[in-house]
Image 1 (cartoon, rainbow, N blue to C red):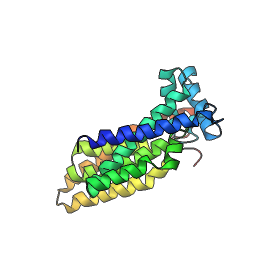
Image 2: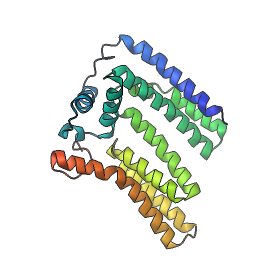
Image 3: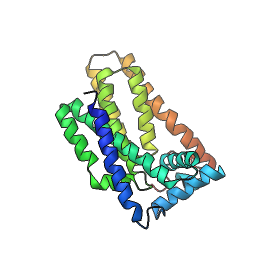
Image 4: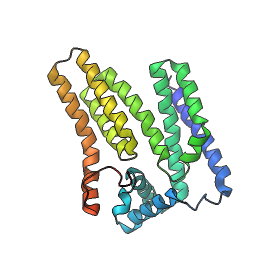
Length: 236
């Protein structure tokens, strides 16, 4: 079990790096277009101008902030951003393995991870300057964290889930219905386990706290720049 996860990560990353090399002749390899161009412009403005404006909040703000951080570290290298996203994609494959192993068995986890590692559309979007790779990562991370939280039922597990739920929501707001449904499911499960009401209330509060720790600062920043107190994208 200990060697499977690193092996999946290395194999998935190798596949993605080979694809990245083969894409080097593409006209859009170093010239972002459409949404990617918009993200690139916002990230460079933040990284090198130190300015945050209302454009950051047109779509989910986490991805352009991530991109700005990579640009700041790498002196604006698009290649560095693409490689970082492919590393994230390889980590997604590892998370899928753990989900499969958790729900079914190790063999199912390996098969699921292999399917994810070889998924052509996912590989394509992971190397584009788009939020798709992060969305895929949060999809897997949230499912795994929900399963682990239901198993452990500890305060720390609920806090971590809340934080990751907040990060996923500021990546793509479409995570919100899933987050709400998952929170209700977890609280129903813990209520049925016979835990006292105080314990259920405390865990619900910790879950909400983790979510708000991420989303409230974004909402405040959005209010400062746009006059709207919201962590949701202005594009709807």
